[in-house]
Length: 517
Image 1 (cartoon, one colour):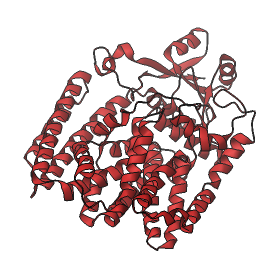
Image 2 (spheres, rainbow, N blue to C red):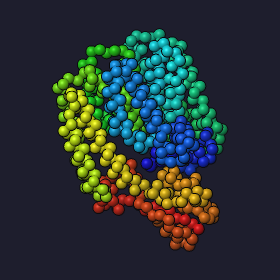
Image 3 (cartoon, helix red, strand yellow):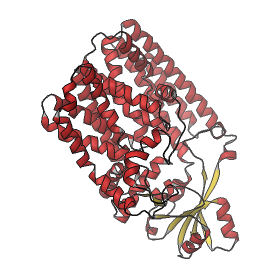
Image 4 (cartoon, rainbow, N blue to C red):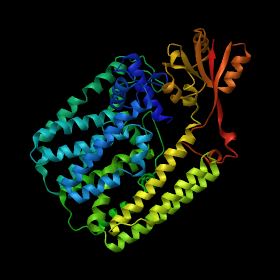
């Protein structure tokens, strides 16, 4: 999906087509926003499986599966086996856990790197010294995915644990200094790549200026610059943003997580110090996100393994039968509300298969209402899985296929024959990362009319642009045929006017694919 997922897939495509593993290119220019690791993983997958959506998503999905395993191990070793089993049944179907396997960005990699590093650190702290190596490798891969703030999530819980347990000697323990040295060693490929692409070329224009240091951006501007909102990429943050974001992103377990937080603050008497590795990391990261100047909803998913563990511990050990009954009722209400929301969307959007979608949704809701477990906890889980089933069947079989019709670049790119892979293609006057990715050839981004004229001189060629520009070129005498004309809307920012089938045409734009012969 555009913009981020398709852009990242295109950057990895450029690596493979140009055999350039050091320099990242996106949007037609040198690209500095994110480190290299996710793009290297996708590019390696492309080499094995081809440049496809499957090839892009597979390594992220495998990392996610590994994250489930490490979530289990962390919960088992810090809590108990029943909590571990319950935590992965929660984590596996939380809403944004599923969405980030569909709209793949950096989070599947980052989440696993964090929880994997923490578990190996736990093993190393208990005498298994060899675990320092994978711990440092996971931590370094996390840093090469998102930046050095990842270390706050990995190490923040440990710092709080040592303080609470009075283990001041751990701050000087040489095992952790070895860990830090190994992390620095393992991120050298990233630092070398940034140095060769940017620091060696101060003449390059990045973020509208020259003399941009890739290493400085990596260590400061991309992290502290976003947090303090002083870097080249700015946003507007609210301290309450991730509170309400978590309520929908962690569905169908939001009520359980809320209850778990209340239980831990007010009623948990065990207060096992080592569990602060989880609690402290969650608290520090959530606070950093909440007070950051740059906020996006998907940032919070790196805490989902810990959210799941905290919720599972509460459900397994702290929730009374009365509380579980209340949570089950909330799940039933959520199930019914989800059905009402889907019904409204089916009516409002006019999806072609709305009758089929409505029947399947109704069957799943009825099944969820009548199925019960052998205990109140099992009933709670069954209702939660019913909510998940209703959401995901609707989203992935009906709603997203409907939305993707309006991702014009992808729809147009599939009309280019694979046999035309050697025919040049370009984008002019619009942005479409999905066209860049799905087109069989490397796609050039044309910025001005002079560059457009130079490109069109290379006949035959393909040009993807707005319908207005396409019509203007055709009227000016350009000898070209219209291969495809597709509707476009930014489907990751849905508005009521688009949802309403009666007003949808007012907010969609037309995109054209020309074949200049």
